[in-house]
Length: 193
Image 1 (cartoon, rainbow, N blue to C red):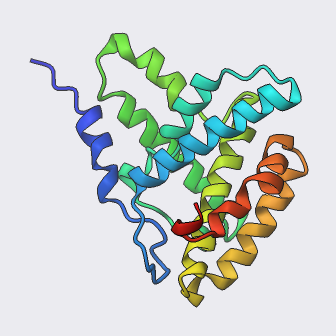
Image 2 (cartoon, rainbow, N blue to C red):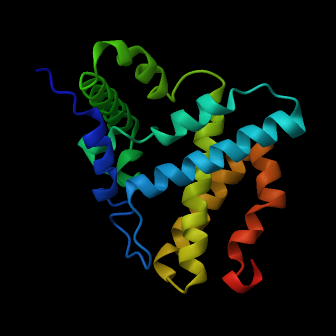
């Protein structure tokens, strides 16, 4: 009998911790991050469609956001300063990520590979800016929340991620809308929510 291990491997995303170089007050795993990224991608795609007349396939975007870091099942979460240290490392890591995704696809029945190949491809099409914006927004929100509870370890990361999100908002009006109208609520305590 053929063994298809894609899903048990995907469920192991909960064992992969993020922000490995940082002292976290609230640990975050890859599965949590993927769910949050999918929620924010849904919000950004919906904002783009409803407010700015875009015609994004929201379901496709949410699915791709959910799986956008699935290659980290094999690679782990490589810290951003390492991943983007130079062009050679970035290109090599991208190659490793692609190989990991291909390996995961091989762990599915043949008749599901086509659909999952599309779901795991977050690097092509108009959707990629929404997914990238959601991913960066997740990082910014994590930094805001860590800083809010007094974790100074995230102060430089907060500055860097805020700058990255602002830069991305120059080409993503849905992200600009989210920053201007919704992001500030993440700084409020639970009693005010």
